[in-house]
Image 1 (tube, helix red, strand yellow):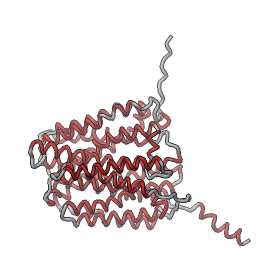
Image 2 (cartoon, rainbow, N blue to C red):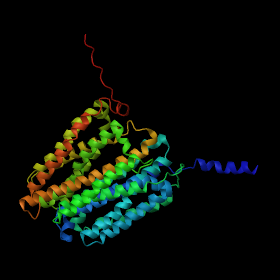
Image 3 (spheres, helix red, strand yellow):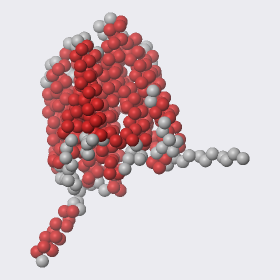
Image 4 (tube, rainbow, N blue to C red):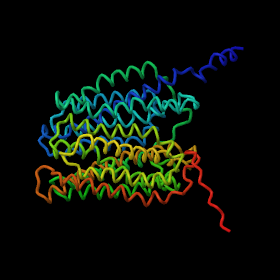
Length: 485
């Protein structure tokens, strides 16, 4: 009898009453908003920070890549950490680490100190978005998932829109350190909301043994490769850069061998045997190099190359975010109309050539013309990545979806970092050829054209997709060819 009573009391715990999914989605979205604002605001402030740190503007690329590097290293293990310690606890801890990193960023007075603070900030940022999505997947009913993701995207989109003009205003009328101060009240509010509304949810399955060796090899490989690329552009001993790149390549090869013989590798390379996933990873990586270089090169072009104010620069950079927002309104309809393969082939060319146009910008061009072209750039790129992010998972089995998501997200962050490194490296190389102390308009033009060629090379991989790729997702159906007599 007592057992029956206990059974009845415990039964509701199996199906807990979670808060409204909109509340959970908006809280997760606010954490993503914090990240988006921080990243887009910082881009506008890089030239001013370079002057205060007494370094060249291209050297500030390491402040961007250090953050992205922390994301690339820690995102693959975010799911395992959340499974072991609880999604709510990890989510709240990540917000706290992000706030502490932001405070330290505001107190720095040199580039090395900024890099260290950005690495800490990136450790928090690496957990916020993926663990936040995990909270949604574990608390929101499947019938509400699509709506929940839409509610989550709203604050994120607002962050990308608000960042550039806010950054321009802060740099022009306040001190660049306020860029990091504004993270504190938003983060504290988010921390309280998570404690108040996010339920405690634990993984029902037993966490698998963590792949410490694979994690170590990945960390060493990514870190050495990215910072080796950074050093190649500096006026330092090139042997140091070569040594870092060599260690990075060796660690990468060692991880490849380890992953082939490991049961649960931290990044499952066997997923590359799936055609749609492999092609999305390769072509998307090439396109993301251009996308990663763009937010680094554009603010420098407008403020150093053209002499625009930070406010004017922020207004122009806002155009790419606006274009990305507009693309969401027609992405689904175009994919249903023409299909994934054809859309990626033609839009990929347009997205690449859009940034090639930036090479021909001049300070006497009408503001409206440059703004309109950048809106188109943002729209084309946003459409392309929406297609990649969907068709990549077309043939991935359900039981491997988590591993595929970790792999794909890691590559996303890594290639954005490589894009920043490439943009800075090309800029520094062309400056060295012309013996310029500061980058000229010709240097910027060369950088935009070279990264455009990189993304254009993805066309070969777009054409390798099958003609019916993703047709079940898009609703597109191939027209039947008429029979010949």
